[in-house]
Image (tube, rainbow, N blue to C red; front, side, top):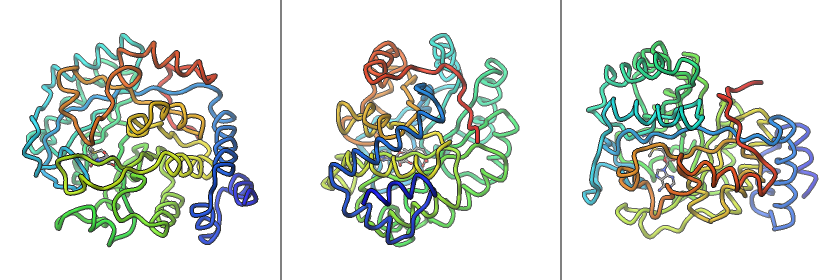
Length: 345
Ligand code: SAM
């Protein structure tokens, strides 16, 4: 099956039946081969430099009830928090001093964080740090809200589509949320001019190879600037508490497929992958990832942004652990890039 890997690298796509074979029949040797090919493509595009993004988890309050997510509204066992504007700006200050030039504001869909408040926080970050990129990951909003944030200085938006298949979407989300609306949001973001990120959880409950093929083909036509691929990990207080984790192997296989299809995309080695296995970050990079997102949130709140069991937020996952990260990267022949790391074709 090496021919499918070679074809994917050369032509940047495959026929559905070829993807199916790659996804179902990939053994250890082929996985090593596709990971090597994807790493080579990433090295050609970006050299041995890994971009860092400072992740600020602004609120764990959410109006949604996604069945997989630990901060879902229906989890009564979570201590809720919301950072103040001052606290978010303090995180940026600390991050800026450490060398971060991208801040990612991520959170639940918190009704108290109104469009006005978000707009004013984005403006303040933009005013104080005009040389930094501002990424938002705050879920589904009206198009006008996305426009306001963009005008205020936000440049990038992360919104995983989670699954392109309508009935699978329904298995993962309650009534009232729809795949169609999520895709409309992604379209709006792109049209406004955001560098847009989307993606999936690998091994989410009910996910089949056919779903993955649809996800690959959707991402191929959407052409996002950023692609977020991490394993599904269960959370004890969700309806999927007993569901198995996504596997490292399938996650890095998909990561490599996306790298071969989208050589210039920004693809993180995710916290979920680093949580699943201690060398997850390195394995992600060696499979073609070129971004890591250390946690800049205030230490006392980090454990409350509990999306899945045992979520990593210390050591190399933390902004203050940059030296540990640097060492881990050096061990596999990479270095941190302190550039903003905008998308370039
Ligand atoms: N509310 C925003 C949104 O919906 O995009 C941003 C926050 S949401 C918690 C960020 C991402 O976390 C989701 O897109 C989802 O893919 C991921 N996530 C949530 N629960 C997870 C789980 N149990 N395992 C792995 N990833 C998870």
